[in-house]
Length: 324
Image (cartoon, rainbow, N blue to C red; front, side):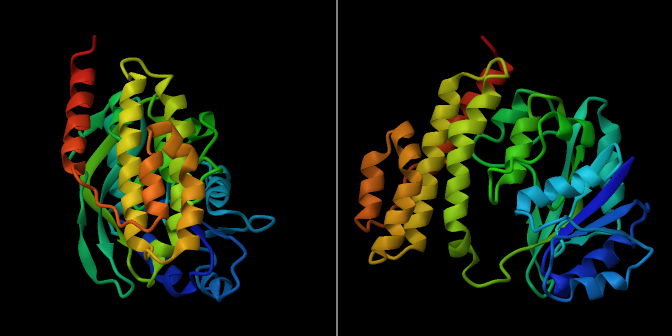
């Protein structure tokens, strides 16, 4: 009923621990590991698990989202979970996800809580989805994601036939393909949340990672807010276009403020490149003047953001609970 895929590339240092954690589950499930043409000792690590896991390899190197789709396509199961090869499954990881799959007949996505760990495995904190319900139905499955994803790649399972129906993870996205999939799934059934810690998600273990990811994250934001969200919103009733537009404006200001704090005022070329990426988004949300200030070296603040978030959340709640 559930199988687990592990997409990996050049993470031999963590892969062994990941696979050991998956082979120590309270409920054994099939495990498929896909090596995306690693150049480190990944094959040596995988040789230690011969017979315990199924190992596959794409015909040529793939992008991250392409690789995720390759792994899911290779798995024959009603439900599929993917776990990154630097993350760690709790002994109850499969049990928790299976619990979620049984909770709601029309479920398309199961999500759970997780711990954040650093490079050495030290626990930095716990992430629980306190704002979501045990079972969420459309259109709330969509509106709860207007300002960001409400599911982590570290603790999820997707119904495979629905993954197929929406075309899998959006391969036009670099880093937010998981969020893109959650959005595409949102009109098609319930999202189930199990408030138990299923896994450990490794963060903050490489210096400069936020800066390294900045351009691809911003490119993904543009695609999500200008293409994916409007397309999904059109499939749902009681989700006025104005709601998506308002969320887009808030997210634009937040992301631009983040970029302005990562890039020093004197980094004019980097700021110019960011502005080039964000120009279509700025035009759509009326953010041209703010973007110009960013290009000129301003360090922007997220002034009033908390109030805007509360306003959007209240508006979403009223729209869903008291539809016109």
